[in-house]
Image (cartoon, rainbow, N blue to C red; front, side, top):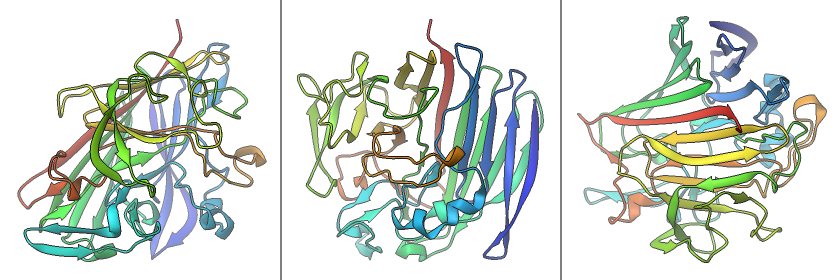
Length: 349
């Protein structure tokens, strides 16, 4: 059980980029950069007794800043904020005042705009070297950043338990009413050799998904998953019903009591015997099978291509700031934004 801080030697905007390493007594290991709160490594023991890294990324920090990578930027392993997924037309109103955001995905704002929380150096505010090692990162997003209102302070704690759970706990406060919807964009692959994830078995505990327009903005309509390719209520291979050219890029409304911590998703890979269970307090989970992934020289020099990973992005409903029937994503002064998401690794029995 340990926490280590390793300087990368890189200075961005006057702030030092540091790697934080969390290790439990079983040898499960997580490496996080305070730049973008990136989960760079998540090493677990598979059913064969082998150590296996289950997240995509790079061997060195500098590669996250490579212009070629940023040109077709997939947010590998990073925090997403101030607002996850798409805000339609990059516009919303609070208390009669309209805010026009930077539009970085056609006519929409995606994942917080051009320079979101994923491209910021976060302060390391607390280290816990106890039985369950943890680190707390903090970022202050100033009023007007990417045209969002309010000074917003966000704390994000990563905690590694003895049960091979990586717990992400979020808190945020603002001095002015603002829109907020945070998530983490980890790219997972549970197969020992990586590659296409179509044979991973997937289950999502959701009876409905959110309708999207042609630009992937949700419309406000919930559609039953029953009798559709989006029915993951029982485990099935990810590639069983998908359009092999499109995969999945869809938000699922979880069958749960709002705010309760519950099981959202379970993914099984038969060769490694690994199971990834995702628990969350959030109302939805977005399944993305990495259609647009195109990364050269990832870990070990491996190229990452479309459908070489899956993401389970727990969050509030996308575009909820424009859809009053959805749970609110407006945070006001004196309120506390909280979210917990757990990535639990186990072996398939």
